[in-house]
Image (cartoon, rainbow, N blue to C red; front, side, top):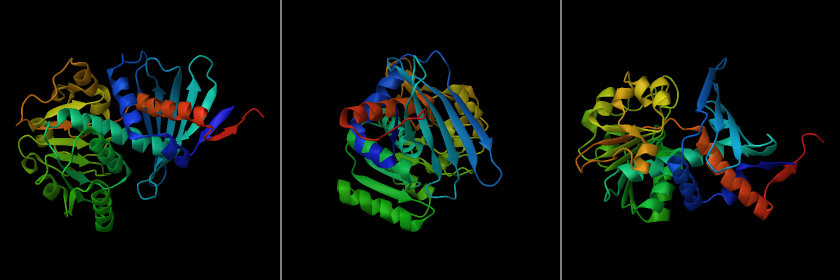
Length: 317
């Protein structure tokens, strides 16, 4: 039997602490024997189709294949499915809503990288792009460190205000809404960008000494949130070097593998230093890796089996 897990199922099954633990363990684990592949195809019209294969994590007896449709003008903009298969037999264990898994794994992995690279006392956060991924970054950061102020910028002023008011009510932090990315970054110690931008939103002059910047938007060719001068001015940590050059923040800004200081996995394993001083600008610019889908889908699947959540379906019936 295959278990169908919807968005509402996942929201009940997943929690921030368990997902952060699963993601950190995945980063620290040995790299999969099979390298990640991210296959993207432009469709006629405004959308793209993307597949991420294979999701593998040491110690997890399963793998994932994720297929997404991305339509920036739609709501939600991301739709698709994560297929969870048994690693020994190939049995399809579960079909999982991709939009939810992607938001959780992207946002929480970003929160982990942000926490590791930002100054220990940094507590003022600027969010540029007030969508689902930024929502999970904030939830993850709040679980990892105390925060005292939030500044929000979004092309949709109403969405920015709603985001700020929601987090002010939940966390008790002071919140402000500003008109653009540079204004947001100018008043923050941590800057998180999660947009669809195809033009740099921040340059070196927009970011002060000691600030940490996390950029989530550059996950396919042509997308860019950070200018080359900012990337060169900072210590850049990515999640995968070839992907960062092929379709991530480095390559999309005309930079090369030499401009990366290392990967988050290397930092968490102690193989590469992260932040080296209070005045250093640090940047985390991930593309997103297939194993992260598995890490969260496996948490959800095991909890669903224990709780009876989801809907069983027989494809061969």
